[in-house]
Amino acid sequence: MQLQITQSQLLTARSAIKSVYLVTLQHPQGERLSYQPGDWLTVQAINPVELVRQLLERLNLSGTETVSLRKAGEVSVSEALGRHLEITQLNPAILNKMQRQLQLGEWSDRSAMIEYAYGRDILDLLTEFPQMARMGIEFLDWLAPLAPRYYSIASASDKTVQVLFKAVRYRFNDRDKSGVASNFLASLSCGDLIEADFKENPMFKLPDDPQTPIVMFGAGTGLAPFLGFMQQRVREVNGGDNLLFFGETEKANACLCCDQLEAWEAAGRLELFLAFSRDQAEKRYVQHLMDEQRERLWFLWEAGAVIYICGSQKHLAPALEGLWQQWFIEELALDAAAAQALWQQSRKQKRIQLDVY
Ligand SMILES: Cc1cc2nc3c(=O)[nH]c(=O)nc-3n(C[C@H](O)[C@H](O)[C@H](O)COP(=O)(O)OP(=O)(O)OC[C@H]3O[C@@H](n4cnc5c(N)ncnc54)[C@H](O)[C@@H]3O)c2cc1C
Ligand SMILES: NC(=O)c1ccc[n+]([C@@H]2O[C@H](COP(=O)([O-])OP(=O)(O)OC[C@H]3O[C@@H](n4cnc5c(N)ncnc54)[C@H](OP(=O)(O)O)[C@@H]3O)[C@@H](O)[C@H]2O)c1
Image 1: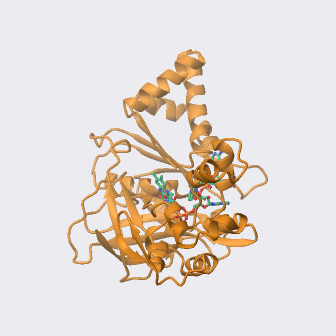
Image 2 (image 1 turned 135 degrees about the horizontal axis):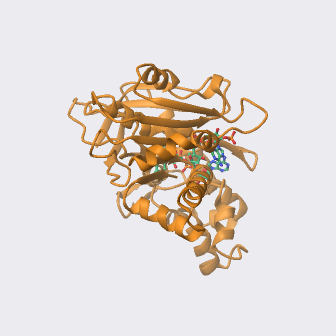
Image 3 (image 1 turned 60 degrees about the vertical axis):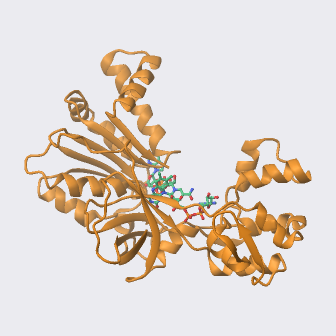
């Protein structure tokens, strides 16, 4: 479906080390949107024009040649590279195929391929393997279709939908790189139209009973779904407790949506716990706040609270899982295996819900 941008806000300071945006979209004809807090919005992006130009040059193509793609049918090479094929990231499957079919590359196994692919794009591949560039138009058959990117919905409304995202920008091999979808979203202005879709996420949902207390843990853009949860929860007059543990880098530059969070706190609707990792010599993370609130959190857990975790799969999620399991061991006199089993069972029962990436 098409959605139209109605607002785009840069939430981080210009001097911050990262750029995080909150973008608001609506149906172009104002039709009702059908999603629930906790669902995702998928975005079909357009590849960076300059990268397409460099690839055409490297493949010795003008761009007006035509190719036939499985989904899009017959399109020009420029359109294929611009709209339909994955070029800002390198799929390790290409490396596997190169090794099997052309005996190129010396990766020992799949994890070596994943490690090689991280940070590289298709232009890097053509630079490091000029044999691939000499294939010209045939090389396009090696590229994966441009996948829609997932964003956790940061709102709860049938008129608009919001997404909170970090513009992925980094330097690798002496080139400045930009992730396709996050920078496409960041470049949009009011009135622009995008191709997007709603995807249900039944594993990350508010409890049916609004009286059930909820405890939310998020870091960075992991805050996103909790904005939607809170928009929904504040509509209940006598709803249950809402606790949010949120971590970011610096209060001055990256306190994402803090005005809104503090307004909910001042209205008595949210208990807010903030950790800024880079505002003092020692790292201060969400799990440190969690440990400080152990007594209250354990009380809420026993009272039936639902626990939500959103953010980094590599860092935040394992740290919180480890600490909860430690609490299970200490509070319930379990051994490590039983604590892990209880964690799994709590996830199955949706007492603990994760949206991590
Ligand atoms: C379920 C789910 C929910 C998500 N929700 C959100 C959300 O709410 N907000 C949000 O911002 N994102 C979210 N994401 C991530 C989002 O889908 C995209 O992956 C992200 O925006 C990057 O996409 P991109 O197209 O901009 O970058 P791509 O073009 O896909 O580039 C990403 C690639 O760049 C490379 N790379 C990235 N950073 C570095 C680095 N520092 N150093 C070296 N290489 C690097 C890696 O190879 C990486 O694979 C979610 C993902 C999932 C799966
Ligand atoms: N692959 C991709 O292209 C891509 C793109 C977008 C997002 N993502 C994922 O989305 C996440 C969100 O990115 P983000 O910049 O918004 O947030 P982030 O990198 O997760 O950082 C947010 C906060 O979490 C802190 N943190 C670091 N390690 C932690 C740990 N072990 N436990 C708890 N907190 C920890 C950070 O501290 P310090 O940094 O000061 O240590 C920072 O204060 C990323 O980590 C990544 O997993 C991936």
